[in-house]
Image (tube, rainbow, N blue to C red):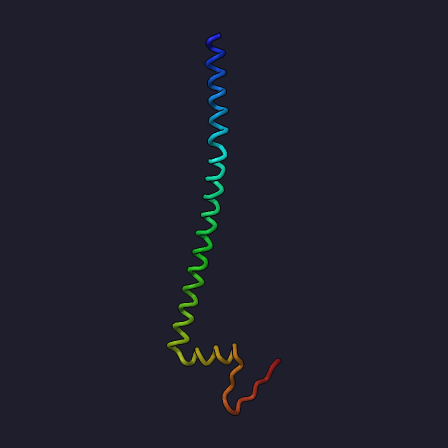
Length: 86
């Protein structure tokens, strides 16, 4: 009889443990995955930010590059030039 009580108490203890800790563990796993996604997004945004900083530096320092970008994006032409579109 004593052995059955010990087994019953152990089963009850395991059930309580599962009820109390499993939802928290699942939430912890979900938050870890969400954190990893945010870290990946941060890395991508930092890379994009670095590229934009390089682009800005080129635009400030290289007049030929600035002219090229102005021609491409804004359609700026020099006096006497003719634009041919395909």
